[in-house]
Length: 289
Image 1 (cartoon, rainbow, N blue to C red):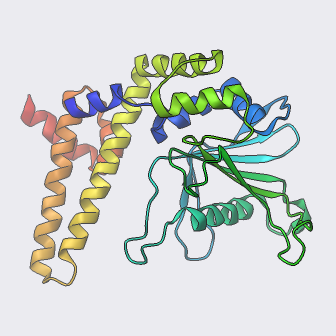
Image 2 (spheres, helix red, strand yellow):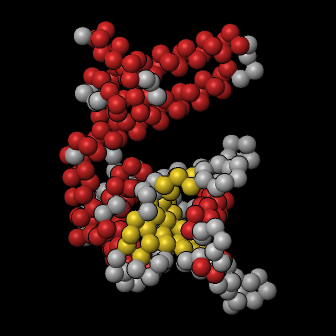
């Protein structure tokens, strides 16, 4: 748990967890969107942060960091992208198809059953990347659909994808967006905007509820990764060995529960984080007493 505590203290705006928390502050999220798009936004409303979108048909779900709608019913999905990931099987970078998938599932979620397609609101998928995916040096890469036979002809589906490049060197961006890039890259505070962001992060790190939420999330993710590795190891093996691995996963969960108990978390929270029963956790407490 000491390692988790240190990890929490060292979190930056590049962390999905901290990014989501910071952008959940209206004044910060609105200002970022206004400066990026050079528009005025009177107000925004939040959908569930880190919302899981899963269509009715068999498909993989996704988690969206921040989804907001402004006063004109334009919807925005903001994502922090730290790693330029490749598919290990195809060796292709996943970011382009990922934006396509995000857009598709966002549209499905926005269009209620039986509604006409023209009721789909304008959308922006905005990926804040700490790498230059296209290696052109642009601060921003903005994509809309255009006709290949006539590039002046736009398909006005009102869907926009923006790939922000915090390592960019040229293009038209506001001073506050440039200062935001500097802050994301190197934690440089050179504007009132980045001072607000840094103050918010400092405040978050002093909040015991936020710390607890992070610990629970990390514990849950750790268990998921362990289970995934265990499942991979037992594939194709005999049933007896499968049972042995399953017992090992339980032991790992019990060890996680012990660490969380030592931090003073409640039995109910630990049960949610580890998928152990309340009775199992109470038994651990009895043995530790």
